[in-house]
Amino acid sequence: MNQLGVITRQFSCSSAVQSAIKNVTVIGGGLMGSGIAQVAAQAGQNVTLVDVNGDILAKAQKSIGNNLGRVAKKMYKDNPQEAEKFVSESMGRIKTATDPVSGSQTADLVVEAIVENIDIKHQLFQKLDQAAPDHTIFASNTSSLSVNEIGAVVKRKDKFGGLHFFNPVPVMRLLEVVRGAETSETTYRSMMDWGKALGKTCITCKDTPGFVVNRLLVPYIAEAIRLFERGDASAKDIDIAMKLGAGYPMGPLELADYVGLDTNKFILDGWHKKYPDQQLFKPIPLLNKLVSEGKLGVKTGEGFYKYEKK
Ligand SMILES: CC(=O)CC(=O)SCCNC(=O)CCNC(=O)[C@H](O)C(C)(C)COP(=O)(O)OP(=O)(O)OC[C@H]1O[C@@H](n2cnc3c(N)ncnc32)[C@H](O)[C@@H]1OP(=O)(O)O
Ligand SMILES: NC(=O)C1=CN([C@@H]2O[C@H](COP(=O)(O)OP(=O)(O)OC[C@H]3O[C@@H](n4cnc5c(N)ncnc54)[C@H](O)[C@@H]3O)[C@@H](O)[C@H]2O)C=CC1
Image 1 (cartoon, helix red, strand yellow):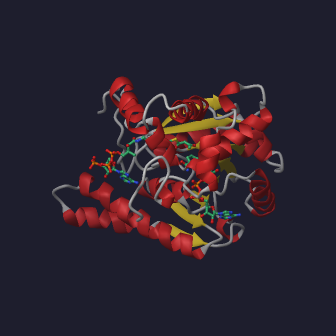
Image 2: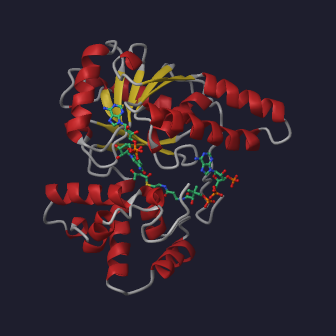
Image 3: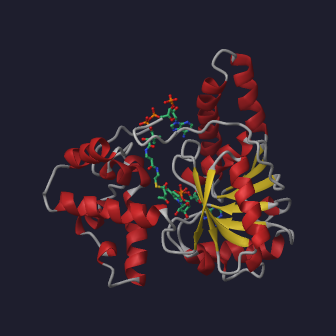
């Protein structure tokens, strides 16, 4: 339990809540998609993980194996054989594919976690809508786009919603379940039950920019960058302040590096374009400079801090 009294780790392999969804296709095998595939497989679901890039799929399988190992070590502390069985059985439930259409043929649910670009998401959902079974629910893991706008291209609008996970997916316990304007009650209930079956605590939100967490977190991170940019405090002191003064597990600049400075910029720019009068979404010269220099945070080895490349 952390200082806020919140249990921040989640390692359960099964949950009391049953979900009618048994076959899930996760599209996008990057940071988020690999984590979503992992927690679904851990919970006993049959998972197809799709990425257009075969190398990314290989990398995802490796990181899922490692992360399942961390989970298993804790779950079966005194029983290495059971730990090994848990890892191999979970891994055995994950198939991979490079074609989203063939990868969705047997899906009860498709969770999209590809790049945060509305045109690319539209192209994907248009193809899926024609190819996936009629009963298949579609969900986007978008962090900043409108669920209604993403789903505008599909016919099955009643079976479209948002399932917003948090990074790192195997550890963060929250799932935001987003109801679009036309999401049916049945689809909403199925998404909630599925999230609970994965061991997540689900909250419900309308299709509002950033849902709950990012609507609060992104302006907070942006304000921290502005504070640092003005020279009001050092990066280290800003982070220490929020960890020790507000009980956050990471300071805002550490968190910005962890999420990715490109992602932070992308979200702010998109919202600024949509809501030009909102001061909190205004572009930040320092953030733009770091991104233009390729300093994107942990993933590139430098952002507000320097990191050892993995
Ligand atoms: C942008 C968006 O749309 C939305 C977002 O995601 S916003 C970002 C949301 N995420 C956050 O706010 C993260 C805030 N940070 C944290 O909660 C913590 O710093 C952290 C969980 C990331 C790391 O915690 P830490 O204590 O500093 O590091 P670490 O010791 O490596 O990990 C903590 C535990 O989680 C486990 N863990 C970490 N990553 C893991 C993973 N990917 N899979 C499985 N287990 C993992 C570790 O094994 C460790 O377990 P024990 O303590 O039992 O040994
Ligand atoms: N990074 C974060 O902390 C969070 C991100 N998100 C959202 O999740 C989504 C994915 O983000 P990340 O995992 O960080 O990105 P990422 O860049 O790590 O992974 C995206 C993957 O999608 C693949 N891809 C691109 N187009 C594709 C297509 N048409 N079909 C199949 N695969 C395709 C890419 O090859 C890449 O591997 C985005 O919408 C993002 O906003 C949500 C919560 C947190």
